[in-house]
Image 1: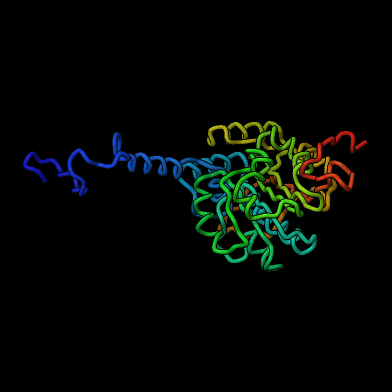
Image 2: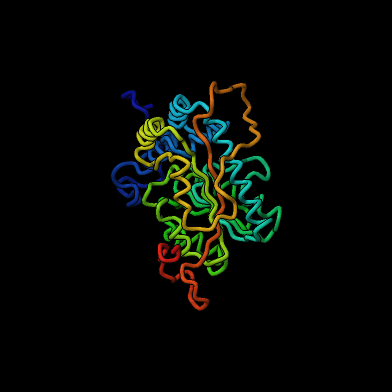
Length: 320
């Protein structure tokens, strides 16, 4: 404390006027701290899903948004658990039944701390050589995933989501370095509702054009039959997430997204044995459902000499 009553600045060890250039101007450490705190407090769909599924890692803003969504769709905690269960179910089917050994799990949200609930753990329990890349653009999710999901040369984390496009995900250094993109790959996405129409409408064509034959696309979508209710929920989510939202779709709209790929597992409503640690039970019939399906990636050019990654897509012609 100085004689003027002000707290003395801590000694830096640098002579006056000779601080490093990086220290010039505003305090960059404080600015970085504020940026990180802003990210931690920002509402995200990963955080909302974590709250609804019974987790406790989300920010206050995500908790607030989850409460508002719950007011519109009271059965959302069960639907969040359905989406989590689908990821585990799809990983099991892909690796055990379909022989996939490379998985890209996009927009996966907060990692699970329980044993064998993450996709890479499920895959490696079946075959230790199974490789998984987690791809999520949320910086908070990415940071936590790097801490929880690494530690093995069979697991990698990429800071990019499917909203950037399939081609950008595949071009990401973590994906290109970890997977052999000339061999079959499965893409797993459990948040189609968070993706804009521009991405979802081109999804099947993009995976058929950019990935080799023999791979799979596994997706699930939060679906609402009541279009008025879906519109209200979409408006609320778009506001809470600063526009980082797609839209809830009806079952028919969801089915149309997969019309160009042969389905291995038909699109259907997912219902699991829920284990939310709560006595909460919504009144009335379900307002939402989670629809899931697994489709096979086929080459867009049937010529055996054509490279699937370089082939041009002509989906309409192939369907005639």
